[in-house]
Amino acid sequence: LWVIPGILLSTLIVLQLGDWARSVWLEPVFGEMEEQEIVDSMRNTPGAGLKAGLIVSACFVAPIVEELIFRGYIYGVLKRFSNPLFAMVVAGALFAAVHLNLPALVPLWIFAIILTLTYELSGSLWVPIGIHAGFNTINVFMMLSGSGEGGS
Image 1 (cartoon, rainbow, N blue to C red):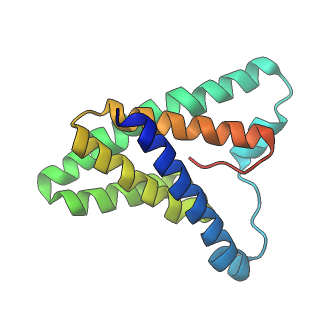
Image 2 (image 1 turned 30 degrees about the vertical axis):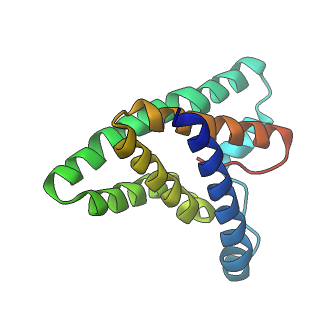
């Protein structure tokens, strides 16, 4: 029950924050932002098999691996040796930073916090995995349809 509302809410928040950050802060300071390399690769991959592999990786493999690492391990270790708020902020910042995308830094940090909150509230790592997979699937669809750059 957590996953569908989590996907919708997090996607709406992250896309709005991304648009805001890009127009208010990033483009005025840095100029027009280039498309992420992975976005370019996914859009311009010639072979259907390779494109399908990239889609499966983005929509299923990456959410599982990233949630195991960031919510399952890093957040868990930090929470054990500090407090949940500190652990959530630091694990979220690391999650955002490893995506190497300046325009998405703040939106991905907020996304990571949403994922951590749903993990804490549900008690299951499957909830943030499902939200992350749905979020990435929406972003991949938007990328391939030309209606946005996409997120995580």
